[in-house]
Amino acid sequence: MCYDEGMKIDSATFVKGIRGTDPILGDPKLEFAFVGRSNVGKSSVINALVNHKGLAKSSSSPGKTKEINFFLINKEFYFVDLPGYGYARAPDGDKEKLVKYIMWYLFESDAPISLVLVLIDAYIGPTERDTEMIKALTEGNIPFIVIGNKFDRINKTARPKQLKEIMEVIGKVPFIPFSAEKKEGIPEVLKKIEEAIQTRSGNVFQEGMHL
Image (tube, helix red, strand yellow):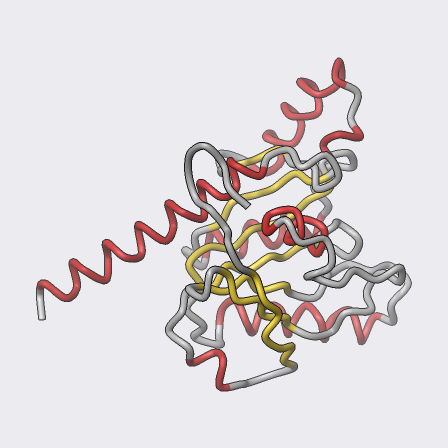
Protein backbone atom coordinates (compact mmCIF):
# COMPACT_ATOMS: atom_id res chain seq x y z
CA MET A 1 0.00 0.00 0.00
CA CYS A 2 1.37 3.41 -0.87
CA TYR A 3 0.39 7.03 -1.18
CA ASP A 4 1.88 9.90 -3.09
CA GLU A 5 3.38 11.17 0.14
CA GLY A 6 4.14 9.71 3.54
CA MET A 7 4.56 6.26 4.95
CA LYS A 8 4.18 3.14 2.83
CA ILE A 9 3.19 -0.20 4.29
CA ASP A 10 4.71 -2.91 2.12
CA SER A 11 4.28 -5.95 4.36
CA ALA A 12 2.12 -7.03 7.28
CA THR A 13 2.26 -10.42 8.99
CA PHE A 14 0.48 -11.91 11.98
CA VAL A 15 3.11 -13.03 14.48
CA LYS A 16 1.31 -14.33 17.56
CA GLY A 17 -1.32 -13.76 20.20
CA ILE A 18 -0.32 -13.63 23.85
CA ARG A 19 -2.22 -13.87 27.15
CA GLY A 20 0.45 -12.60 29.51
CA THR A 21 4.18 -12.09 29.84
CA ASP A 22 5.90 -13.22 26.65
CA PRO A 23 9.38 -12.85 25.06
CA ILE A 24 7.91 -10.69 22.29
CA LEU A 25 7.44 -7.90 24.84
CA GLY A 26 11.24 -7.76 25.09
CA ASP A 27 11.62 -7.19 21.36
CA PRO A 28 12.99 -3.63 20.92
CA LYS A 29 10.82 -3.03 17.84
CA LEU A 30 8.36 -0.20 18.43
CA GLU A 31 4.75 -1.08 19.16
CA PHE A 32 1.61 0.76 18.10
CA ALA A 33 -1.29 -0.33 20.28
CA PHE A 34 -4.92 -0.25 19.11
CA VAL A 35 -7.42 -0.06 21.93
CA GLY A 36 -11.16 0.55 22.08
CA ARG A 37 -14.49 -0.87 23.10
CA SER A 38 -15.79 -4.16 21.70
CA ASN A 39 -17.21 -3.90 18.19
CA VAL A 40 -15.65 -0.48 17.50
CA GLY A 41 -13.80 -1.97 14.53
CA LYS A 42 -10.17 -2.30 15.65
CA SER A 43 -9.52 -5.24 13.33
CA SER A 44 -11.16 -3.44 10.41
CA VAL A 45 -9.06 -0.32 11.02
CA ILE A 46 -5.84 -2.36 11.10
CA ASN A 47 -6.83 -4.18 7.91
CA ALA A 48 -7.59 -0.86 6.21
CA LEU A 49 -4.25 0.63 7.24
CA VAL A 50 -2.27 -2.31 5.84
CA ASN A 51 -4.62 -2.88 2.87
CA HIS A 52 -5.08 -6.53 3.82
CA LYS A 53 -8.73 -7.42 4.41
CA GLY A 54 -8.08 -10.67 6.27
CA LEU A 55 -5.00 -9.86 8.33
CA ALA A 56 -6.68 -9.03 11.65
CA LYS A 57 -9.58 -11.38 12.26
CA SER A 58 -12.83 -9.83 13.40
CA SER A 59 -15.55 -11.79 15.15
CA SER A 60 -19.32 -11.61 14.88
CA SER A 61 -19.38 -12.06 18.66
CA PRO A 62 -18.20 -8.87 20.43
CA GLY A 63 -15.88 -9.49 23.37
CA LYS A 64 -14.67 -12.84 22.04
CA THR A 65 -11.05 -11.80 21.55
CA LYS A 66 -9.10 -12.19 24.77
CA GLU A 67 -5.54 -12.17 23.41
CA ILE A 68 -3.11 -9.39 22.58
CA ASN A 69 -2.35 -9.91 18.89
CA PHE A 70 0.92 -8.81 17.31
CA PHE A 71 1.34 -7.95 13.62
CA LEU A 72 4.79 -7.23 12.18
CA ILE A 73 4.65 -4.23 9.84
CA ASN A 74 7.35 -3.63 7.22
CA LYS A 75 9.50 -6.01 9.29
CA GLU A 76 10.28 -2.98 11.46
CA PHE A 77 7.52 -2.41 14.03
CA TYR A 78 4.37 -3.97 15.45
CA PHE A 79 0.69 -3.17 15.32
CA VAL A 80 -0.76 -4.54 18.56
CA ASP A 81 -4.48 -5.33 18.65
CA LEU A 82 -5.73 -5.30 22.24
CA PRO A 83 -8.95 -7.00 23.40
CA GLY A 84 -12.03 -4.82 23.30
CA TYR A 85 -13.43 -3.42 26.52
CA GLY A 86 -16.95 -2.65 27.67
CA TYR A 87 -18.86 -5.60 26.13
CA ALA A 88 -22.20 -5.24 27.91
CA ARG A 89 -23.21 -8.93 27.78
CA ALA A 90 -19.98 -10.25 29.27
CA PRO A 91 -20.02 -11.23 32.97
CA ASP A 92 -18.75 -8.42 35.19
CA GLY A 93 -15.77 -10.54 36.27
CA ASP A 94 -14.70 -11.16 32.68
CA LYS A 95 -15.05 -7.47 31.80
CA GLU A 96 -12.85 -6.43 34.70
CA LYS A 97 -10.23 -9.07 33.85
CA LEU A 98 -10.00 -7.74 30.30
CA VAL A 99 -9.66 -4.16 31.49
CA LYS A 100 -6.91 -5.16 33.93
CA TYR A 101 -5.15 -7.09 31.16
CA ILE A 102 -5.27 -4.09 28.82
CA MET A 103 -4.02 -1.74 31.54
CA TRP A 104 -1.24 -4.19 32.43
CA TYR A 105 0.04 -4.14 28.86
CA LEU A 106 -0.18 -0.36 28.55
CA PHE A 107 1.22 0.65 31.93
CA GLU A 108 3.12 -2.25 33.48
CA SER A 109 4.51 -4.57 30.81
CA ASP A 110 7.45 -2.32 29.80
CA ALA A 111 6.57 -2.94 26.16
CA PRO A 112 8.21 -0.39 23.81
CA ILE A 113 4.93 1.40 23.04
CA SER A 114 5.49 4.33 20.73
CA LEU A 115 1.86 5.39 20.30
CA VAL A 116 -1.57 4.26 21.45
CA LEU A 117 -4.40 4.57 18.95
CA VAL A 118 -7.67 4.89 20.88
CA LEU A 119 -10.60 3.94 18.68
CA ILE A 120 -14.06 5.34 19.32
CA ASP A 121 -17.28 4.98 17.37
CA ALA A 122 -17.66 8.41 15.77
CA TYR A 123 -21.35 7.83 15.20
CA ILE A 124 -22.09 7.01 18.84
CA GLY A 125 -19.43 9.25 20.34
CA PRO A 126 -17.04 8.55 23.24
CA THR A 127 -18.30 6.14 25.89
CA GLU A 128 -17.49 6.33 29.61
CA ARG A 129 -14.85 3.62 29.09
CA ASP A 130 -13.32 5.64 26.27
CA THR A 131 -12.99 8.76 28.39
CA GLU A 132 -11.52 6.68 31.23
CA MET A 133 -8.89 5.32 28.83
CA ILE A 134 -8.06 8.80 27.53
CA LYS A 135 -7.71 10.08 31.09
CA ALA A 136 -5.44 7.17 32.07
CA LEU A 137 -3.17 7.64 29.05
CA THR A 138 -2.97 11.38 29.69
CA GLU A 139 -2.09 10.91 33.35
CA GLY A 140 0.38 8.15 32.44
CA ASN A 141 2.09 10.46 29.95
CA ILE A 142 1.72 7.91 27.15
CA PRO A 143 1.47 9.36 23.62
CA PHE A 144 -1.88 8.66 21.99
CA ILE A 145 -4.30 9.77 19.32
CA VAL A 146 -8.04 9.22 19.02
CA ILE A 147 -9.50 7.70 15.86
CA GLY A 148 -13.21 8.16 15.19
CA ASN A 149 -14.11 5.04 13.19
CA LYS A 150 -17.43 4.68 11.34
CA PHE A 151 -17.38 8.39 10.52
CA ASP A 152 -19.03 7.60 7.19
CA ARG A 153 -22.23 6.66 9.02
CA ILE A 154 -22.76 10.27 10.06
CA ASN A 155 -24.83 12.37 7.71
CA LYS A 156 -22.60 15.00 6.11
CA THR A 157 -24.75 17.86 7.37
CA ALA A 158 -24.52 16.46 10.92
CA ARG A 159 -20.74 15.97 10.92
CA PRO A 160 -19.69 19.44 12.16
CA LYS A 161 -22.02 19.16 15.17
CA GLN A 162 -20.88 15.62 15.95
CA LEU A 163 -17.21 16.60 15.67
CA LYS A 164 -17.76 19.51 18.03
CA GLU A 165 -19.46 17.25 20.57
CA ILE A 166 -16.66 14.66 20.36
CA MET A 167 -13.97 17.28 20.88
CA GLU A 168 -15.83 18.71 23.87
CA VAL A 169 -15.63 15.28 25.50
CA ILE A 170 -12.10 14.16 24.61
CA GLY A 171 -10.46 17.56 24.98
CA LYS A 172 -7.46 18.91 23.10
CA VAL A 173 -6.03 15.63 21.85
CA PRO A 174 -5.25 14.63 18.24
CA PHE A 175 -8.46 13.33 16.64
CA ILE A 176 -8.77 11.74 13.20
CA PRO A 177 -12.15 10.99 11.58
CA PHE A 178 -11.90 7.53 9.99
CA SER A 179 -13.85 5.02 7.98
CA ALA A 180 -12.47 1.50 7.66
CA GLU A 181 -15.24 0.72 5.20
CA LYS A 182 -14.67 3.73 2.95
CA LYS A 183 -10.89 3.82 3.68
CA GLU A 184 -11.01 7.44 4.77
CA GLY A 185 -8.44 8.84 7.17
CA ILE A 186 -5.71 6.33 6.33
CA PRO A 187 -3.04 8.84 5.23
CA GLU A 188 -3.63 10.94 8.35
CA VAL A 189 -3.21 7.96 10.70
CA LEU A 190 -0.11 6.72 8.89
CA LYS A 191 1.37 10.21 9.16
CA LYS A 192 0.93 10.13 12.95
CA ILE A 193 2.59 6.72 13.08
CA GLU A 194 5.47 7.97 10.95
CA GLU A 195 5.89 11.02 13.19
CA ALA A 196 5.98 8.79 16.27
CA ILE A 197 8.69 6.63 14.70
CA GLN A 198 10.75 9.66 13.78
CA THR A 199 10.33 11.14 17.26
CA ARG A 200 11.39 7.90 18.91
CA SER A 201 14.36 7.52 16.56
CA GLY A 202 15.43 11.09 17.30
CA ASN A 203 15.21 10.51 21.04
CA VAL A 204 17.30 7.35 20.79
CA PHE A 205 19.91 9.22 18.75
CA GLN A 206 20.05 12.08 21.27
CA GLU A 207 20.38 9.64 24.15
CA GLY A 208 23.21 7.92 22.33
CA MET A 209 25.02 11.22 21.90
CA HIS A 210 25.15 11.59 25.69
CA LEU A 211 26.58 8.15 26.39
